[in-house]
Length: 523
Image (tube, rainbow, N blue to C red; front, side, top):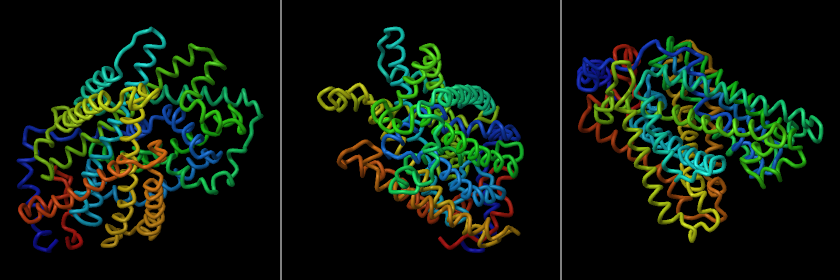
């Protein structure tokens, strides 16, 4: 970017503000969210009960290693080191399109736009994929308890409507709903942990806490399956414009979420191994999968408590759906505000909710769900899947999309780590080398390694015995999104230089300033 363009960027941003954010449009709500609210929304995205019931058992089953609890701690350490530079950069850049803005300012505008489309694909994939598991679980629960047989997609469409309504309301309404649901999740998992230690058929064994169980041949697979449990932790920065004090609220919420998630998952995974028995947990996980937790609780505490856990499992999924919906809506808002997408996406309601982005995400969810409904009719019948036909929404919609989304988000974090180094290379702002170089470099390399491991083990993550078209098509969607975004940015540079100049800098009052005058590497 030339010095002339840099100097003219503020006026360009101001001149486009009217078209992107009309005067009657109040923008996002300000000074609304505190540390607890943002922390709870981050934790909601990771769905604690879902991770303990499904993620932990899957990790034990696939890795055939007792190192799962320590794996959660190692991932938490990697992400905490990543957060050092990530939150430091966030103190200088407040933008609802977090990854997009950080990469645009830290590396280049074209790569930033590419990252924005990867973020949209990844967050949408995570959110819509979870709908598949939600619809299937609720349909099965109603049939088991009341004999009421219903299509899995009916409940998904109803849930999409509820999530959409919350999405167009004040963000603190969503925060309060998610806070209650997350609190109940934690409570029921803690009860499960206590009962596990009380049962302990082999005693309170520390076998799963032995470092040799982690640092072995299964290390890469443990991290691949464990990292998805943390997806959403980076979302604090997305709420920066709505935080009560972005420079303090966002970093505190990010670190709090990483610490709580990491310790809670590690402790619960250890408790799981103690409750079933270290010598039996792998085989039991392979035989029962996510049902293992509910079978165990039925045996130890009765059917009623197990049913309560099942209901909270469903609310856990709902909380995650709402959290990812909010993230997508804010990305649409940020991109519409800056002219990367049509300005309509920047529309907000009188209470500061990004209603246009919320509606867009709802429409995407409906379209993708309908595509899977039709696909299930064509490819998910008994002839295609045999006895597993009824699992179509889980084996396809949930598995395909959530794994694709997690892969995209890990890639974005690795690139963002490089962006932190690039951003502070121009002006360290008095920060240490640890914050501006070492921490982002170490975490970036670690995340890049995890991303490569995900690509190598993608067939395993999809439950495939042999690679097929989806093995390559699903990751390809992420890479194609990045390429399309880069090409679109280059077109903008040629045809709309004023819009191009404001990419990643925001156009609301206070969202741009001295940072906009900095020289960004030539693009």
